[in-house]
Length: 223
Image (tube, rainbow, N blue to C red):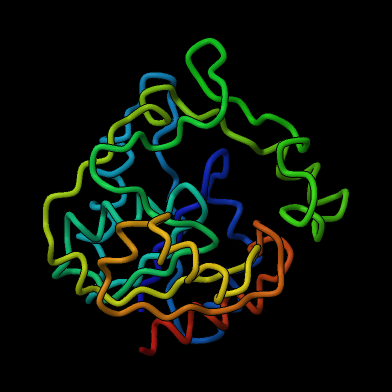
């Protein structure tokens, strides 16, 4: 199966490098996506890139989206609900229609630069070693303003019928379900087929637990 891999803020396609061999070994064709990141790029441009990858796939691909890109993956499901087999959300919730994509970090000269590790202190990044931290920071791609402040648009309610696997890395599935029940993730509340998977890692399992992440992705791909 084609597996389309979308990294979260500041990550490019190379973030998935350690996940590719185990996914290939499990019989899949992983496709790490390089999202438009020119300062003038928009959220619509990034969505178009994901949708084009869906349309170019053989069969019905599985979308894997990490962190803030969980919203982008969900937007692609909304655009092509009949063309995807499922969605894997890696440690994140998709925003609802009308919400800004990712406005939680400061803009500097028209982009959102990587803010360093201080905002991610604690369990979020505790499993990253110094080499991994340096790699992520060195490869970080500034997020264009029109991506970060872009408005999420969702129009096709068939998206709720697409199977979703939610990887819960920073919190246990029970805690995540409590947040959802309290209204923290309206889009997740509407999903008809959601599997919550506990995962022993911080926020960036593609760096710290790539083989186990591939195993969970494989399980989602096999239904």
